[in-house]
Length: 167
Image (cartoon, rainbow, N blue to C red; front, side, top):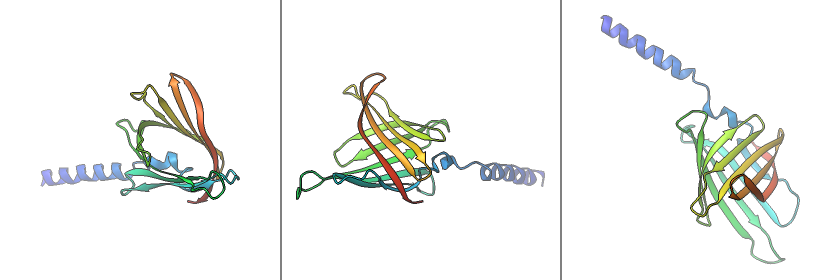
C-alpha cells in the first residue's frame, strides 16, 4: 500500500510540474502568424508563415518569394523552409534552413522582446550568416539577411519590411 501511494505521489508531482512548464515558444509569439512583403515595389513580393508544428514541438517557417525582373520575364522563385527546435539548454534554440537552391544552414537562435536573431557557425567556405527579425510595430517587422566573410564584419544581402496578414 505504501509503495502504491508513493508511486501515485511521484506521478502527481511529475505531471503537476510538467503541466506548469511555461510555453517554450512564447518568446516567438510576436512573430508567429503569416506575413507579407510590405515594401511597395513591383520587383519583389513574398509571403512567409511561422507556426508551431508537430504538436508544438517545433516552429516552422515556410517562405515564398518572387523576384520580378524585366517586363514579361519569368519571375525568379525562392522557396525555403526553416525549422526551429529547442537546443540542449532551453535558452539556446537551434534551427536548420533549407531552400530550393540547395542551401542548408544551421543556426543558433537568440531572442529578445523586439528581435529574433539566427546566427550560423562559419561554413566550409568561411562564410557566416545572420538572419534578423526586428519588431518595428505590433504588425510590422524588418527582416535582414547578412553575410560575413570576416568575423564580425557583416554586410546586408537582403532587407525588407513585412506586415502581418494574420496570427
